Length: 274
Ligand SMILES: [Fe+2]
Image (tube, rainbow, N blue to C red; front, side):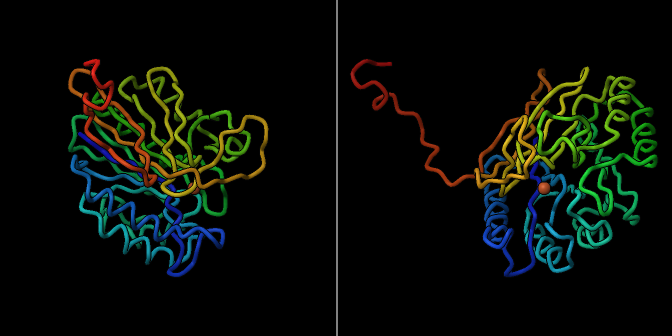
């Protein structure tokens, strides 16, 4: 199993820019082309929420158009910037696992050696996240069925990562997910978005890790709570299930940079044979 995780694409309507100056649509379109061109192709692409910036119909039309060009299966969940109904309407064709109920989006992908569990932590009108009774019951039901190793994908991190800016808008009842991690040892990964930066911590047997945004990032500051953002280059995470080891997660920059080049010993230490 080899998965690409994108997050927080924040599409705008055609011709509009994020914060009036960031051409997020062009950047995301370029990224989708780059993902399509990967020579080592993922089995699926995941987007962990904040698909659009303002929850507007025009934003979803553009996001649907760009993501419709992906040449891989697509698994998506909404974030706090999304409108649940418009999100479902836009992506149910590309990701039919989302179902039909915008208030209760949750689905399992069972075609890999591990089970992927996708849940919605967004709350209409709020920046912070919440696990509904439906979502918690659905998770408990899926985890109770057998002991297949399972990963949860959700927008809001279930713990405070120590970010003065983002901790107040994390998942407010994330301790309910931590209780499931305690009860179910097969739950070994929680992958989220929301914080626009790759940050990792651990609770019991579970790695809890956020993905960067494809376009704009949030500095990781411990004491300054002001709402910063930056154009530190976007990135994605790749999840590679390595036989005999388990899941290995790596960070792939989406910056425009030179290389890669093949290592050539003749130019490394000329004459020294190193
Ligand atoms: Fe976001």
